Amino acid sequence: MTDHILTERAGANGAINVIRFNRPEKKNAITRAMYTSMARALIAGENDDSVRIHVMLGTQGAFTSGNDMQDFMAVAMGGSMGTEVLDFLAALALARKPIISGVDGLAVGVGATINLHCDLTFATPESRFHTPFVDLALVPEAGSSLLAPAAMGHQKAFALLAAGIPFSGDEAERAGLIYKTVSSNELEATVMAAAENLAEKPPKALAIARRLVKPDPELVMARMREEAELFGNQLKSAEALAAFQNFMARKK
Image 1 (cartoon, rainbow, N blue to C red):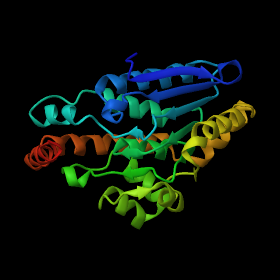
Image 2 (cartoon, rainbow, N blue to C red):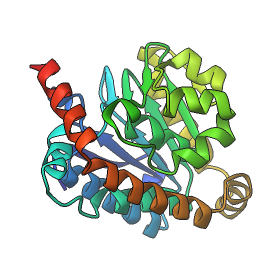
Image 3 (cartoon, helix red, strand yellow):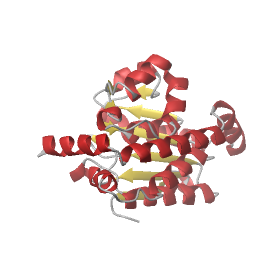
Image 4 (spheres, rainbow, N blue to C red):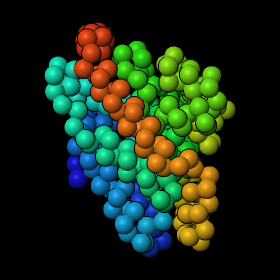
C-alpha cells in the first residue's frame, strides 16, 4: 500500500481496522493510488472475521482536502478517470461493518461526503466541511445527493452540495452531517473509545441494527453510478477546464 495511506489493527484482538490519510504536505489530497489502498484496506477488514469496526482518520489540521487537483486536470485535458474512485466508494457503501471517522481541520469534497457513509463521525469545532463541486463546474458525488438530504434536509444539503457553503464542525453537528464535536486533543481517543465500545457488542445484532437504519446499499450504488457518469461528463467539459485553470492560477 502507498505510504500516503497508513493501516493498522488496533483494540483487543485487532478488532479495529484503522485507515489513515497520511499526506500532510498536500493536506492529505487523495491520489488514485490512495483510493486503491483505501479500497483494499476496507475489503481486507470486511473479509477478516477478527475485525469488527473500521476507523478513518487524517492528520492534525486535515482529514483530507479531497481529490488531488493534478488528477482532475489530467482528466480535464483528455485523460481517463479510471475506476479507482468508484472502487473505493463501492467498498465504502457496501461495507457491512460499522465505520467511524475522526475529522480535524479540512474535510473538502469527498473528504466531506465520505462521512455520510460513516455511522459515527467525531470532528473538532475548527473542522471545515466544504464541497465546492459547482464552483469547479462539477456535481455531487459519493452518493451524497441521496444521503445528504436524508441526513440534513433539503436546504442544508443544498447549501453544502450546490451552494458550496462551508460548515464548521459545530454547524455540521447541528445540521446532522456528523455525530459530535470534540476538542482536537481528545479527538482520536474519543474515536477509538467509540470503536472499542462497538467492537464489544454482539456482532450479528450490531450488523442487523446497522442494516436496518441505513439506506438500501443498492439504491446508494445506483445513485453513485448516476453521479459518476454526470461527474465524468462535467470533468471533461470546457467549463470545468476553465474552472480548474482559474483554481490553479489562484494557487500560484
